[in-house]
Image 1 (cartoon, one colour):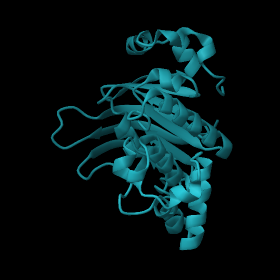
Image 2 (cartoon, rainbow, N blue to C red; image 1 turned 90 degrees about the vertical axis):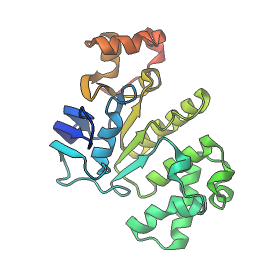
Image 3 (cartoon, helix red, strand yellow; image 1 turned 135 degrees about the vertical axis):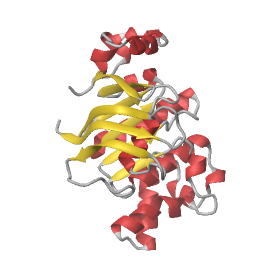
Length: 260
């Protein structure tokens, strides 16, 4: 796979922080792959996502950089979709679901309001929400947490981006719904030939579908490689600790076939 983005020496420090959120990260993101970025809270994985999406807060000090294959950074909402951890916070409570899912397509693809609403219903069907026409007329508070997360995914994909970042997109959901959302993301990115950056603290959740994993700890990248290789023979002590907390990962049938 060719590199979609080459990250070299990337460091990010927030104002007033005693240590950097990211410290000298070197990492390639390959076109069409499913890369899982794994680490505990405070490991820097969400900072990496925000840096990639151009969403770092004002005052953040950045060293090093990123080189994109396209020659310029992706446009959030158009080239890069972003699914946040809490859909209740990312969805507007006073706009209908259809308006919100179609908003990006109106802005980036130049669709009319009617065309955008039609696309919204199509996207809601793609994320497997029952009666998508009815859901399009609903408001966020009328949906369950799992349904709202599906809406957030539909909105992120409406403008047909080439890359999707899912930042802890399943952590607020129960285990059954988590598995459903992960399977949905996997199916959607495979069908569209997209690149997926899946950020999670749960190595077990990522192990079933990710092509590669990147393990973060305290702002540093401690290990990266093909999922099977890292799980079978982790090089870093921290990775061994993560795997030890999910001993069933040692069972090969639990890991789906991944691209080389």
